[in-house]
View (cartoon, protein in one colour):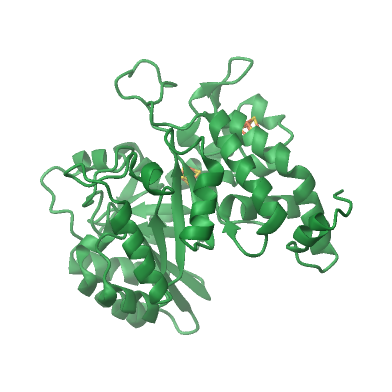
Length: 394
Ligand code: SF4
Ligand code: SF4
């Protein structure tokens, strides 16, 4: 059996919002005329196959969209009941859901709390920065609705991980975003997602991106500015996924972020009808592995097509990456963003390369110090007090 993680998309790409940078909405075209609602049969089949093919002991069930809450709460109650029915003895199921939060209410929050569902909530910063691109189908801003959801989740003590897209509107305001999330929103877990949107109006120039996209330089500055504040005062208090991932890489431990892993292939996506794709960012005909109603999910996940997809991330690295001093932490980033040519003219360099290079080189001294603390059996968070006392930083 191959270890893999599955993102289930019960409403496919359908969402109640209309954020400018959303890459999912165009995926509706893959299923013309579909209702985009997962049937009972597919729900049951997917959970049975997934749970019987996972080794455990901890198994994560992850829901994503579009907007998965559009399925209604009853769908998720049935999902939990089915997961309990199908899970193997000795395994424990944990749940996560990614949502824009706008449909959450007290009843939803009680359910999320009861089943310890980790909620990934999209919030791009304070009002103006969030509302720059995140609006509903009528063009109305969404900040107040998302903040209402966050407060509701916090009141119900639901675990929340904020997903902050980094784009042209907020990229130049890293500390404003970070301090807002930390101090006003009261968020402890933050994930940054760089927006890199290819420009469809320039089909002959694959390296052209939309004006909403963050540049590599901006993304690098965004991360380093936040890192500098975090390392002086927030280590162990605020968890920024990119910093945890970097520390794991420096320490030589695996981490869960595919973008900076050596290979892909362990994070599959399943559409509402049971179609299984290599990755949520490659929900397209070329990367359709098959349908779980016709072939078992674990067989599709371990198919040669999927293995090749996974290996391609490493095997297609240009020489510039292969010789890069931070390759062990970067691994060339996500293949979907490898749209540039390297300095010596090879294709396949990541659009965010200069940002990754800047960030990973910048954090090296602090990462090495935190690794030394870890090896000494001490907490990486001690770096904060060391710095306040002006102790040596090597
Ligand atoms: S293609 Fe990108 S998002 Fe998909 S598994 Fe690979 S690194 Fe992750
Ligand atoms: S920093 Fe740039 S050159 Fe280095 S591995 Fe990452 S993408 Fe490749």
